[in-house]
Length: 160
Image (cartoon, rainbow, N blue to C red; front, side, top):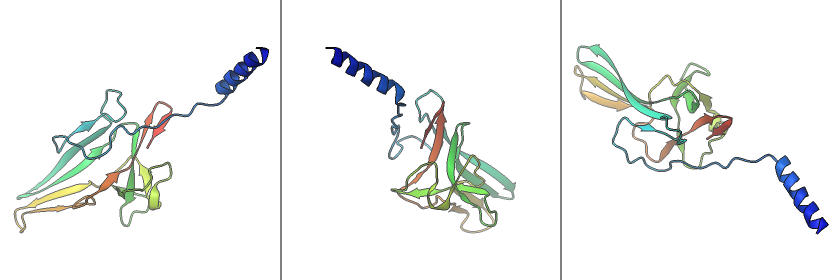
């Protein structure tokens, strides 16, 4: 009986001294079935929106305007970005990742983590002076089966 008590005490002490590891969970995976194009997603379930999409519009007059579709950041989130050509280290559009690429502290394929994105994911341009009057472009235009990598800090925990 004394050995069992000692064994239980030893196991309890060992469990107390070993740091607990956090279990990651996927809060959402797959296609979003939401009415868009603008939507808010509470990724970590804390009641505040973490992932917010929106269109930004620039109007130059004379029938010309551009709309940029992008994801806004909350204070605890960073995205994997590409670099804009000619601006070494300057973050560009949020990189579309291939299935199987790992999202981790070190970004894949030489990409970088950044709070900034200086280019929208998708553009629509309306120019009534040139045909076609409406054109689409952007790093996410005409893509299938890609995903967006992000880092989200919640308290002392970091999720990818």
